[in-house]
Length: 373
Ligand SMILES: Cc1ncc(COP(=O)(O)O)c(C=O)c1O
Image (cartoon, rainbow, N blue to C red; front, side, top):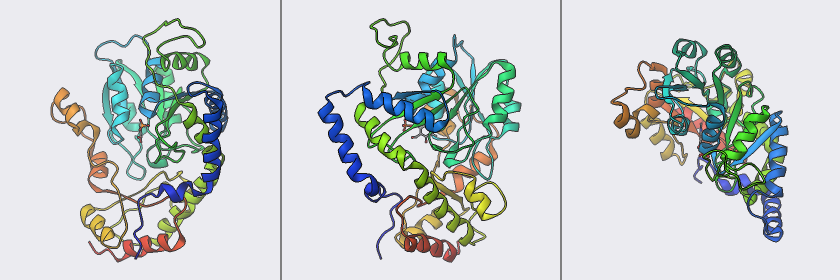
């Protein structure tokens, strides 16, 4: 029986392959490789796709978070805080740490793994300078409610949208940071990222910060910036991939709907907001399909024995990573976050990617239903 990979880039890129090759040839022949016409065009196209005015391309998603926080939170003082979800990819936390903000962890929602608004409300202090809701797995965090409470207090809201390109419910904060790492719903063929915002001043500062702190078009450094620009080759690839992103999201939703309506196993908790499988399928853009199972390793081994590759996102909470433990003592930054800890203990991501065949989807469903724990 053929193995079912967790993701298969060759098959995922197949419908775009000719166009991607033409885009690469165009960049090579054009002879401009950094901050040229492809990056400018992609920035315009992606801003429009997000329904926003500005997009500033960066070298990766971590730098998009970093540049946006630097642009949005001025004069950071020791002890200033950023509220972040306890369960996320470590990059969300690293961005806060790198700009001098102490990450303050809040617990997450059992159905989606995104931060809970009530937990944010309790965590806000006079030292809170930023809140970073993460649209994890493709589900929108409650960023509109969070933005409402932040606005009253002058707190900057940066949405980590690395896993939620195309989700119509995101974008209420001051800015969004995207990653175009190849596994993402909008993936480059290498690293890439972007800051997206409606705020012209924030966009201007982000454009300076990604380019050594220079005012665009000059050699004058007004702030201490970094070098993190989306390059022309990746921008050209992303322009191709953006054109089919909406169709790919619909394919992802169709696969999610199969899983949500056909996996029936009390040992496997299914994700999503809403009551019916249809409602749940529409509640995300399905970057991942994260189920929870108390017997996580047994489930993964059982699926692996049937040729089905899975992954876990993320078995270690950022606060448990040695870099955070060493700096702040065991669990010093996390406190009581039982739901996030359960996600970290029990999460298994099933294969879900555009290009999976019907029989592969049926094999995943059948194997999940056979699992007896
Ligand atoms: C939630 C989240 N934030 C940030 C990042 C960082 O993006 P990058 O890998 O492009 O630096 C990622 C992806 O890797 C992510 O999943």
